[in-house]
Length: 125
Image 1 (cartoon, rainbow, N blue to C red):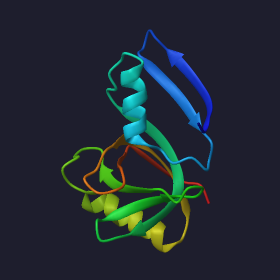
Image 2 (cartoon, rainbow, N blue to C red; image 1 turned 180 degrees about the vertical axis):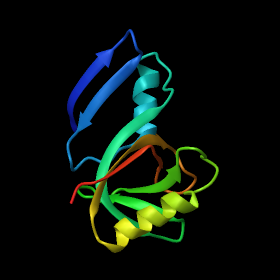
Image 3 (cartoon, one colour; image 1 turned 90 degrees about the vertical axis):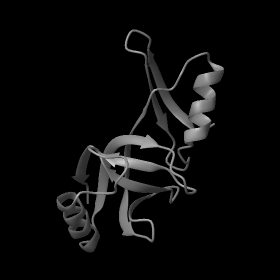
């Protein structure tokens, strides 16, 4: 439900999924679907657009359509939140109220929302 497009590359072992904007990204659902298909999910790469916010957990991205939250991490360290330089850049963008597109790896976080490493950050508005 909510899958707009998909493409499977068996040689590379990758699946590309395009979701409707009003569908939240469910890490558990993706893991389950891949497992039921007889495969193991190695990683989840996402391109997610939205607005940056500060929360008790740290800096987060909130998507436009579903208002889904992603705790942001630096790609160099999944055990720590953002590096000082990246944190400064994210805060500057957040203070300007600009929308961003973030590409990175998603993983399950201990709280109720997933985490997302920042591999690429682009201002879109």
